[in-house]
Length: 113
Image (cartoon, rainbow, N blue to C red; front, side, top):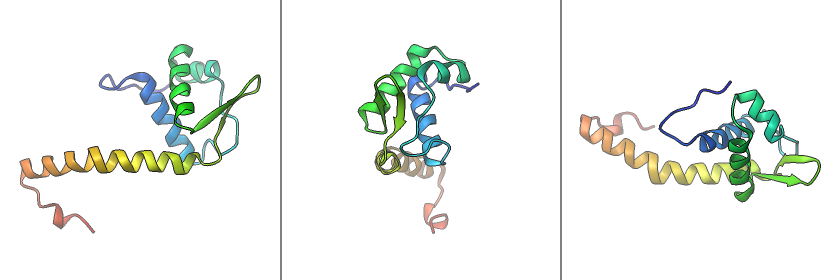
């Protein structure tokens, strides 16, 4: 079962989780991933929610559907995921960290390599 954060839509959390599994090698490029129903049962979630996650991942080119066979990890999925995550990190997480550090009086120069 997957534990969900109430502050973020479940379908986004599922998509993020699948991306993490691709990055850590659990789901390998060009290999089949569990079906919508299989994944829904495994994580304790409605298959319609999983289908929405798979749709997002397909739209981003991270997975693709082979009709009648299932969903597969795209051959360049790792590069796509890293590109998306880098952009999010630079545009969202770094500014938030900087603002939080300023509020708390933390000098980030002491912690950056």
